[in-house]
Length: 308
Figure (cartoon, rainbow, N blue to C red):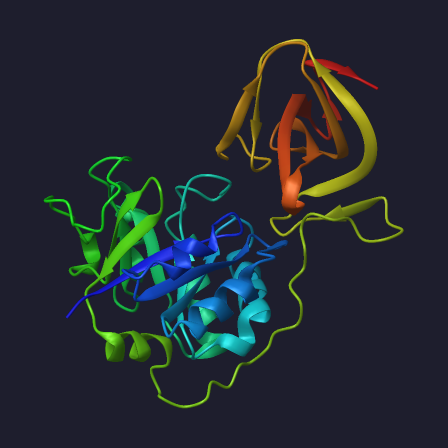
């Protein structure tokens, strides 16, 4: 048996949820440790009113995986047992991309809190990054024939499940909408959502420590990966091209390369791993991070621009 689904986020039209081909709807719930989809409850309720199977996903931000799992479950605890749970593992806005242990820690914490193993969404080419979850979790693989495959018809192509051996789901379009086929029936969906068949007993954790906002009244704080940040509002004007990243590490995903003369407003700075970093507030509670020069022994040793 198979089922067809769509997945949605805050920018998705309700028409996608109403599409008669979709037997299930998977809703973005949270991202990182600060973002909650403002339309999550509406999209969840609409899908339920249409009699569709449902799921909820967390988009990995690359912070502390245990804290992100707790943030996810704290925000969807009333829905646990009613829909499948999913970890969305992608490169964009994920500072832990390439870390083959991050997903394992996340799914272990979700299971500890809910007794449910989440499905892992990942592109086929990086299945290796989540391979150590294969004994417990299902896998939902993204692989498209093209970005203009605007059809519910499956393209003829091979899709690997890697260490997972079998596909739980396959997302095969991502242009006009995200369409997927799942290799299970409605009863199988329900078993993934609620393996014990009983009302979920959630061990609600204490609110996770947020790495982004500084504590009120404090000039400095330590984030979830041990780096010390100092509150300071100002601007930095670069004198060379510099990468703006989703994390304050040189291996964090790049948002974009800023040309010389770029002006970046920042609200905090940190000296770690040989660089001077500043933090740029962005939309939806997100932050960008910019290396502004080199540091040694806790002191700035070079500047790649000017501060105001």
